[in-house]
Length: 139
Image (cartoon, rainbow, N blue to C red; front, side, top):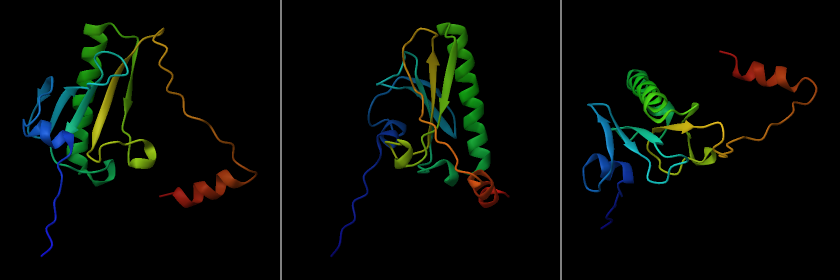
């Protein structure tokens, strides 16, 4: 007899009220909480209530709703925390630093002098390579 145990993600446990979180918003589609390990204080996570592992697996209507909620969080951070800007980030799969395989959007308040450097490296295309990749990705 094989018994398959499927562990809940930390987000599923928060959604199910099995572990505490500071909730900012909740509706039928998503939940917004404060990140317990923030880049800056007020760093929020917009979490889909259904455990879609990645952005691509989430239905467009739900993703659109999550982006509208992220936009409201952004506005509140700017108004209430007086931040100078925000980072809106979706880490999509392990290769992109997604630590929890459950779709979530980071809304991070940023300040001109916060010292948090989140700069990706940049590559250079070889001669003609940009056109070849452009053809592959054209739709």
